[in-house]
Image (cartoon, rainbow, N blue to C red; front, top):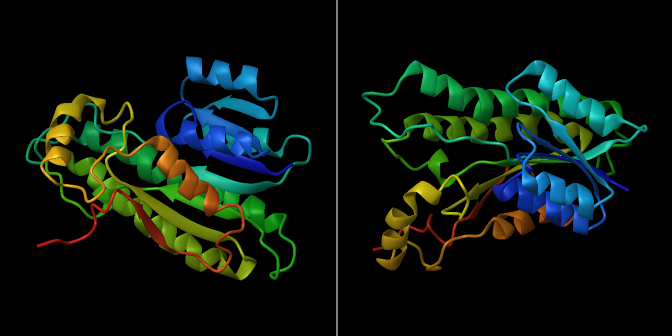
Length: 251
């Protein structure tokens, strides 16, 4: 049974990814800052689900996640960095506080980088030959990595950082045949987007997206899984837009 670490597994994209991996027979170590009802349900439904309550912005939390994954001499074959936060309060970048900037960056960018570093070294230590797949890392970024939202600049900056983290580790880990790719979700129906439901409803209705509907966490989870199950063995450092066509420039 293959082991995957999936952060942010209690809700949204991370939860959808964890459920899909579990359904496909993986052992999943799901990390989240809180134990929510969804975690309780997953524990009851899947014997191969291990929940770790940890904050990826904290070094001890990251080591706790890897330790749980390694238990029983298991080797991590996939890391899905889905944990992420939005600013607690949207505000103009002319009024953004350092506290808000640090909160978002510490989880979305710093946490993603150093958990990837930790798990990458684990994968290298347990790697076979360079001819075989020795692991896959998938980072959940956002259309905000390249799209300006001046009311949540810290989030945009953090996701642009995740894009570069993807390229850096893809370059560094290629010699070990460990792939690193990025998914850029669009407007996905999660708790994070719930406060702006009316705004996005109106924009989708007015033609913002070629595929004129909200994205679902499951839409993203399917793309994540495809990047870890061996379907794309010669793809690394790639950004895949799961956004209903938002990225298409149209006249």
